[in-house]
Image 1 (cartoon, rainbow, N blue to C red):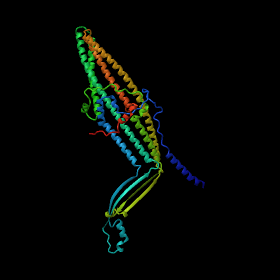
Image 2: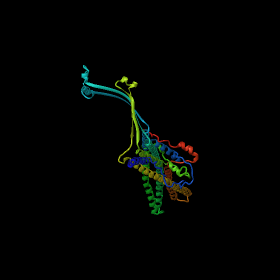
Image 3: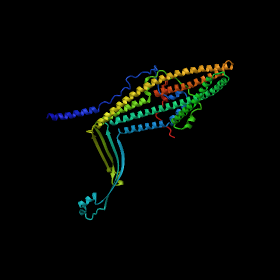
Image 4: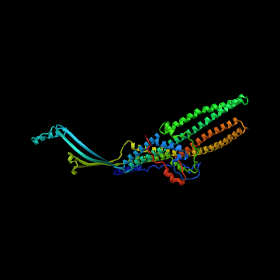
Length: 505
């Protein structure tokens, strides 16, 4: 008697333990890192910031035209938009599972059988012909049934399985939108970087040609002085060596220009003709537009789309854990149909021809070889993976911003030093020119000063490119741009819209 009372109690205890494990609270979203800075080391002050059309900070109309064209016709961006659309439709499909499913149906069932088979054969076995003299069965029996119906099905989402699956799909959709913005920033960064390379190569090619002309003239002067015995042969050989080196650099510069123009043409989704229409003959980019403002807060890091994507995928994994746990619990579903049925078309719409069918099912997992429990463990392991990925993404982003700000500051100092050196070179060139015109200085000294100025201009052109690229790296590291607190309203209006549908013609 005692054992009979213990058995139901043990079963009830086991059931409660099973439900308790299945209804465990979802895992908590972890902090991205143990310690997060309040402000970046290179920008100590605080401020309010919003993302803008950040490429316009370079204040280059030609660059703006190229970016607009890339946004309109880039093929990688079109593929990213298509992936967002796929994720949006998957989210809609997942949400549809929460609602009842209803579908209409119309049918014609035309059945013909020989009389000596099936129902006709049973009539013959009963001897109906003997009971009704003169009654003869036809050779075939035909039955036609017309029907109109509406079928429905619905699963009661007691444990939130369908809702959690829908939330997971929604989080994946948001992650795909962030992936699109990541791809967008990457494509724009490649575009802007290629544009600055083109600017740099064109300027250095032009400077190199001027240097060749000056060196040719300098060679003539040195050769004349050597022939007259006024200069050593080593001077002439050095000038000729400088001339050959400068001439040898030109093909490399032209190769770099062709490569940069080719990459930009691919980003534009077109060919070299498209590039010729967009680029001016001699584009000139400013070395630095507005300086990077001091006081970039660390919370600006959360506008980076890759950080947002990692966060959304972590949330999706969390909802998937809920959905898999809900599969351990019983499910209650209803299905049925209602409609009209008749053997004649003209009787199909009579009220008394209606029929109904309603069924309910209560299913509970009993034994599936541990598949459901393994699904839960798999979902929890995926959550742990995405939690680690999210933390690594944030830590990487923090260090990328710190590095980008430090590099940009160093490039700014280098550019300032070269700009100061150029002013000195120009002053020296002016002085040598005046001395030559006054007859108290040599023409060779003037040409040497001119070469020095051209060399510094070439170095400064490279520094301007590196400074612009370092600023581009800051933009990319922060996932956009920034604006002071009094421009937040304007920034909100200028934010990029949802993923557009690129032009496909």
